[in-house]
Length: 394
Image (cartoon, rainbow, N blue to C red; front, side, top):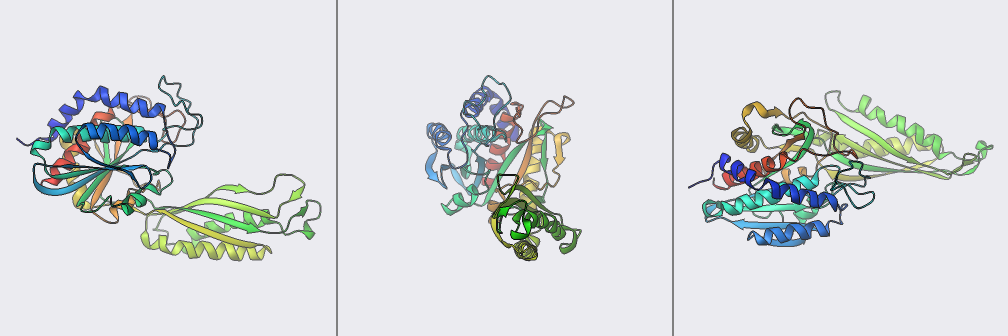
């Protein structure tokens, strides 16, 4: 007999304690992007015990795990990210990070635990599973590089659809945020190098000051948003790092700026590198400096497939009730799950991980005191397993 969405939720509730214990283990031992070897080892052990065919070392420390159903059907992929952030934890939890300066401050420990939970549920349902399920445990999401590397290693070969989630501590556990179309902005990195001529701070006329040029460039870059892109197309250009010199009475010879550029429009994204280069070069030249822009593409615009998203909402409503479903607000936060959606249909959604409805608001993502509501773990596992089970049958 086929499993229903409620069957997945019931069985997920039965393994909740195990999911919590695994999430806390991962939280205690976080690993940064491209260093997720221990995390991958823990996940691999569990997957093999469940009977999955497992390939390790994919796209770095990523894992590709397959489960074949008992009947013909399609191949559906589910993805979780495994990396942590370079943040010093301040939660005071008994299971807080033991690694100085490294913390699961974005909840990827929860995502990994949920997908391991979904793996367990699907293994139980395997006798009635049509088609197959592919689980992707991805490294290096925080630096926007892991998805493409996993794709390069064959993650999407033969896959028909893909689904994934991200916890959201500002939404109460037991709720979901989902929407079709553009949901998350592209996220690209820029590095600006400014070459001048250093010298004594008391004799600026004998120098070429890269700091003055850099400050002018920071201001001029905002003219792209206000004067070169349609006001109906949101764009963000942010400089988050400006490094130059180390003494108050010395004009340095060079400066380096680092930032991020984001938009919801693939066409706008294509035109931004040239606009940025022109401003950096010409403004630097106006200040007698040489300016060079390095533009590094990371995550494209995340666009949810309407048909896949519709199917996801049906499953979510069956598990959580329609009253707990929210329309996901568009955000400029980047997510390299978008790389998968550029190639195959699928949908990405927010899963509430905050305090119970009406309680005090939690700390947000990337905060050193983030502590998710672990009641979200079985819910996420159930939704992931149920949508894969349902869509593989078509």
